[in-house]
Each structure stands twice: as structure tokens, then as C-alpha cells.
Amino acid sequence: MPVTWYTAPISRIEQATPRVRRMWLTLPEQSAEFYFSPGQFLTMDLPIGEKRLQRWRSYSIANAPNGNREIELCIVHREGGTASEYLFEEVKVGTEIKFKGPDGAFVLPETMDRDLIMICTGTGVAPFRSMIQHLDNNGWTDRNIHLIFGSRNREDLLYADEFLDLASRRPGFRYTATLSRIAEDPAEPWIRKGYVHNAYEQDYAETSPDRKFLLCGWTNMIDTAVEKLIIQMGYGRDQVGYELYG
Image (cartoon, rainbow, N blue to C red; front, top):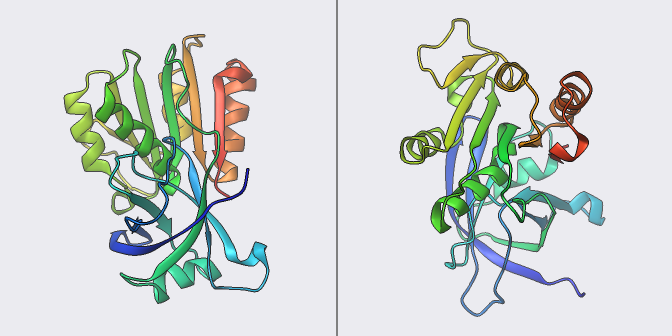
């Protein structure tokens, strides 16, 4: 099938954490509809080089499909990154962005027949936020969902208020934040000192075929998690899915 390219202006920018921006694109009414499944990503063609590999950058969509032609992205600033420098220093509200998509098979299971444990670091939370928001908007599942989000410090937590609110409204949803750079054990029951690996190793040490682990984040985290879950903890390969972020 031919690729459809879209052009949309940036309609809003918010600084979410010291290193992460939330950025919204709003498609003009006259443009083609942009249909996507929760968890998919788009690919921007940015004016930062001559060759395709220099210009193209992919970002997961952080909101659920909502029919209002708005797309939210969650973008981290990387020191020295040409795309990062452009998106943080040059773009502003009204800047037009060219992109294509959606792409990706990292989506909710067609049949929700197992509990989902979503494990992520940094902006890897974006596709999970889209999935969770979609379920909240369109009928919650009977299965349990546990989001384990790893970061360095409290100031780096993304969408924490949203997830805490959801946990208060949906008995089947649980939110755990792990912080690796804090000095003392936190008072809040939903925060743990350490890394994401400590959380799922403790909570899911006893294996069960009734679980599906979804991983999203940097390569090192995913490599470690796959090894721990499958080789060390004994979960099946069909119980672990992932999306790499570099």
C-alpha cells in the first residue's frame, strides 16, 4: 500500500519534566484521517539532514484515538541529538511537522485473556498510556493491569497523577513507580526505591501462564528484563513482548 504523509502544525507544547516535553499535533480538518491503534508510533521527517536516515525519527503516540484529530507525543531531550535539538530549540506552536504512519505491532492483545504487566522506563511509558487511556475510555477489561514505570527521580515521573487517579477508580489497575536515584525509601506505597527489575521480580516470582509482560524502553532494560523473565524466572517466550527505544 502507498505511504500516506501528513502535515500538521504543533498546537501545544508543555514541559513535562526537566528533560521531557509533551507535544501535540492537530491535523487540519481538510487532511485525511489518521487512524491508529493504541501503542503504535508515527515517523517524522524533520529538516535536519539530506538523507532519510538523518531526517526520520519515530515516536510512540501517547494518547488514545479520540476522534478529535489530535496526536500527543512524549519526547526526551538527548544531548547532542540533532532531532532532539531541533524539537527542543527550534520548533514552536505553529511549526508544521511532516510525518507518516501509523506503524508498529506493539498493541493491546486482540483477546484480553491474561493479566498484563506493563514495564517501561522514561518515555517508553507513552504507548502504555495510550493503551490504558483507550481501555478507560471504551470499557475496562476484566483482567488485571499493572504498570511498572522506572525512572531516576520523582521529578522524572510522567503522567503519575493520571495513573494514580485511574488506580483509585479502576480496581483492576495498579501503578508502581521505581526510582533508582533516591537516597531514602519513599513513604508512598506506590513508589519503590530501585529499578523496574526489582519490582516485577518481587511481585511475579511465582510463575503463572495467566500473565503477559509488555516491555518498552531502552535496549539495556529490555535485554535484562527478557533474560530475567524467560531464563531466570521461567516465563514462556509467548508471555513477553517488547518495543525498543534505541
